Length: 503
Picture (tube, rainbow, N blue to C red):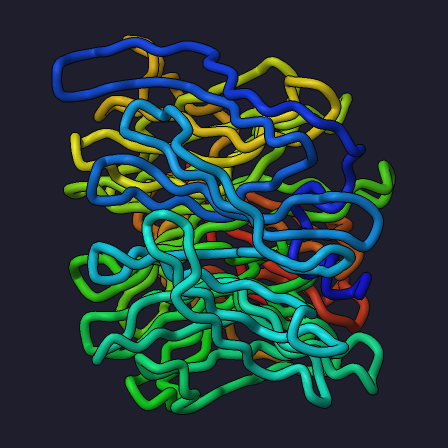
């Protein structure tokens, strides 16, 4: 059980910790109207226990549904949903699950304008975890429940999307209970009656989890998540997995460059057929015994090849958890972390299609706010859902509705930290590899001064020099001992890297 809990929450702060309490009220932090068409507000919904919002849906009445997991007490976790009207006023809240059980909602969609469809996991249907799909009406009443797995292994759902013929595709993971910790990525397609049509999985000896799945324009599916079985140089790798309509693999790509690891939390298809995924990246600082997590965004072409990578070195660190496209811009929700006291503040980033940051807005700030899911609203604004711990010691559901500029106050968008890093897709070729004495480098850096740096696998710089940019560069490496090294070339804001072996 503890393994599954860590999978469902890590590296976010855990939703499984909270004290019992009882407070049935809705606290309005602030409400104002920018125009007759765009309402903006910020609301907290404390239900008496600790709630972690995992997903957000806008309904056809312009209201919202928030859903996630509620911590009732020791070994007692239940799924919950909250329905609001378009002003954020609560219309009802309900919990799902049996006392003393483990039940949660992790993602959801609106189906045929009138049915809420959620995925998650539960032990209500057996002695071990099962992947669950729940269909509810807009009043929160059950229509049907489908459960999958839980016979020999333990399955859980993390993301859900619509498929053809009123079916659904769910992604998540399957835990091999005999191995103790091996978890493979799992994707299951259901028909409209809940019958499994196919399932696909991959993974290695460690932990591999799919976090989000989305339909693609060719009737296939794109999946993102993370793999600790395929390590980057310093941690897990994010991945994109492209499936056709029958679940056959078209390609699988891993991401995590230099000394940075990667986690993928959400993915969307771009109008040109490529993809954008977001999550976190970072590295380990052995001197401080600390993992540095920062927001992470990657753009690829239709084959999954990287076009650009963006990460931000906020002093506070942070993550991207949800992405939407609006016109020719990318909007991404997440949070940053105040390292001195491990609290968070909800964020909404804004990017151009080329990956240039156009600013960000932050919300809350009373104690700790997490940003989990963003949606475009019918009035042209945005709604971001997450959790807030500013009232008592519990996590409460948190909803922010912005105008079309991502603001709840005029002029709220701020410039992004100068520590942001945008890496273009620089062509780089090195040879021979392995190398004995002289390493030759070909790149498409055309002008300027290049900074060349070589590091060993412990991250120590062993060689550094500058050369003018030109097509062919030679490095004399006879002084280096045998081993594996990382070459980094930087030209202003652009950089590229490659690994090589020295004999």
